[in-house]
Image (cartoon, rainbow, N blue to C red; front, top):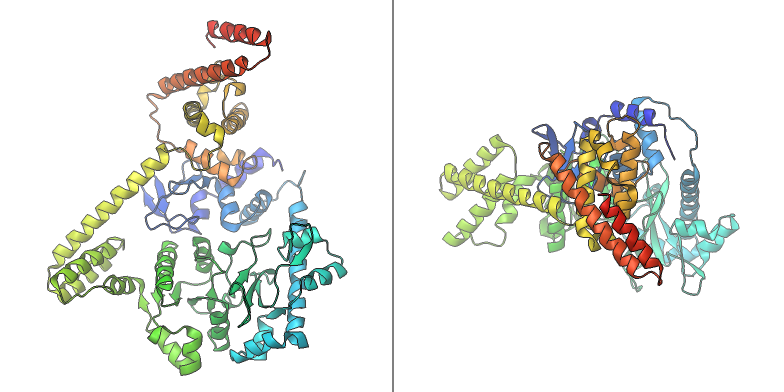
Amino acid sequence: MAVDQEFLLELKYRNDVESVIGGYVNLKRRGSNLVGLCPFHNEKTPSFTVYPENGSYYCFGCGAGGDVITFIRQAENLDYMEAVRLLADRAGLQIPETGYDASMQRMKATVLELNREAARYFHANLLAPAGKPALDYLLDRQLRMSTIRRFGLGYAPDGWDGLLNHLKAKGYQEQDMLVADLIGRSRRGGYYDRFRKRVMFPIIDLRGGVIAFGGRILPGEEGAKYMNSSDTPVFKKSRNMFALNFAKNAGGERMILAEGYMDVISLHQAGFTNAVAALGTAFTAEQARLLSRYTKEVVVTLDADAAGQKATDRAMDILSGVGLGVRVLRIPDGKDPDEFIKKNGSSRFSALLDGAIGDVEYKLFMAGKDLDIETNEGRLTYLKRAAAVLAGMGDSIAMDLYAGRLADKFGVSKTAILAEAARAAKQENRRRQKKEFRALTAPKPGAPPEERQYMRAAGAEEEILSILMRNPDYLEYVKERLSPADFVTGFHKRVFEAVTEVLETGRVFELSLLSGRFTPEEMGRIAGMQNRVLSQETAKTALNDCIRVIVEEKEKLDAHKAGELPDGEWEAELRRLREKKQRGI
């Protein structure tokens, strides 16, 4: 949809990029810009930069970038108009309705209706005679019927088309069921139920809508232990959490991050209604941001095996990156919360929670888990690892405190530990700077084949666009020497046309005026161009060099195409190219 440009500019000014993104990312000022851990990929060193001056953001690690509308699209998994509406509501603005396409909204409403009906179907099957194996499994896990009803648990019976026929009888179409990922399509073109012979866990969003399902295979049956809905118009697993619809109302300032569905349900039944879990995927920054709206601290209680420890490390980094306090619960004998509560009761588990250790203590503990610190070699290795932990703290007072503790415990000077931490921090900073430099100079990941094929032209095109975004007064100079047809790559041609259109209105270039015409991924590339480091003193020289490169590369391409023309036509084409060169174009 085309939204009035004046409205878009007002939307941008009413939703400044620093305050909007600051609600999702823990930002720290670095000069005139702000930096933080990227919410769109996992990282330990900040490569996500916000540019308040031009209202944009860009991640040097994954290439995400754009304006405030693009950020909301990515952070909230919204389409363009949904993001505009959210920001308009935030600013108290009324959106011009002309031309609004509501087809996506209708599709989302249909998927939610389908999921609600599917949840009713699964729950009814659990209570029917055919669902007895699944109900027995849940009761054997000591779940009460009140808990089963509260979470809307169900059963997908054996058979290929039970849900399919049920939904068809309700008047729904197979195509919509496919979009909702409730059914699949066979190679022969037939349809079948996606979930069969599984205990079903409805996934409910914060508004109470059923957005997806998780299915657990019954003991003794063959197949993957868990099957989860794929992403749909209403569901993205990396941006939702199981049981957050209940946990957000639990009160207090602490939430528990558990491993899976059954752990969470058992915790809720035991009275710990502030427990949540990720959804069949690694914990993500989007999920951490979601939690940060409802709590100040998260206690991580994941499996004690190697994979669980790795997941714990990842979750701690992500949670602290969005400004949440983090503690780690280490359950004796490597048990999960469900096992521990059944054996020891809720009060003992509550005491464990109160004794959960902070993220720094946990990292220091894990740093020595595989070492014999009774030997000089083991102690030296541990202290170097511990110094690296301190280097990542970002709090000089806390760093000094922990360095003192380590010095007392191991009989070394605090000065030496702090010096080693400073060295580790400096080394990590150099690594980050190299990463940013590589991101700025390397070919863009996922670039179209034509850009990889014509790298010289693509690089020159990108430089021209960067200069124009920063120096609108060069537009006429460029237009006298280049037309959109001279651009070798389709993407840069589209951007050139869009930038030209904006600048010809007399406006200063604003990313927000482009965000409705490009995908979030494309906006990331455009934001990268806009925020390239350019020397204003040499901009005109660089512009001329890039124009020359584009003309040369276009001539080579045209000459190659001319050579493939039928006899008689290529001579006319070569004559045209010769005349063009003589005119200095």
